[in-house]
Length: 359
Image: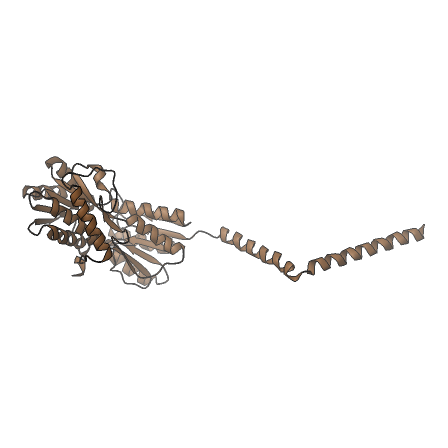
């Protein structure tokens, strides 16, 4: 009995040794087969690590409250769309006044956002100061190229190209030979609007009279309305609104007195196509979106970028962009056809519109 037990134990030991040797042999052959699972496992570990990392964070710090200003509304929409599409955590901070804006900009730095975006000439002074104090932070500013810091990307528009088309339309359409513009303020930025408009007006109607009045701010529809009524009393049958929120006052005057007008930034013709017959477009949504895209894809650079007709950054309803509104008889299809030819020449460089703010 003891002999039988010894034989059984011996057989079991042999079986265990053979199994162990066979397992080691399989694990070592081939050598690549042994490395592949390890590499695969490391890759899976990295992916899981990336997924668990917090999202990059971007903030849009606006120098004023969005309110009814289509310029900032559009920018905010593009910013949020970019954040969603490119997997960024985004936030928009509105400011009640210049002092609050600088505080909000500093708060964005303190909260360690990966990208801090702001906009317009109203933000220039504070951004110059805060970006210099925080050279390791990444900033971008939209709608001005005046900030020249090594950690700031400046994004501008060639508004004067679209303004040229609007001025050309006014010159071809006016029946009184007098047109006007109600403008927020007399600044280099807004000279790109009035100067471009005047170039187009004189190109199509050298004898036309151009009236320009300044509201004194961006949020005063009542004053803008009074100025539009004054211009109409002087014979203007087309008055372009260039006063941001103040354009609402120009639109009211046009509806009451029966003259024609135009809006800015978004397609304002849909509000009252009988009187608001054109809209000069500015793609602040596209620029905010593209800024986030370049950051998310690792193509972000600290330089100056400008968007004009060729890049789709600016435009004019009926000419470069479709609209739901019917075309007014005051403008007419023949004028639109001429404007389309001008737009193509501007895009190709055959027709050069001078930048009035550079003069």
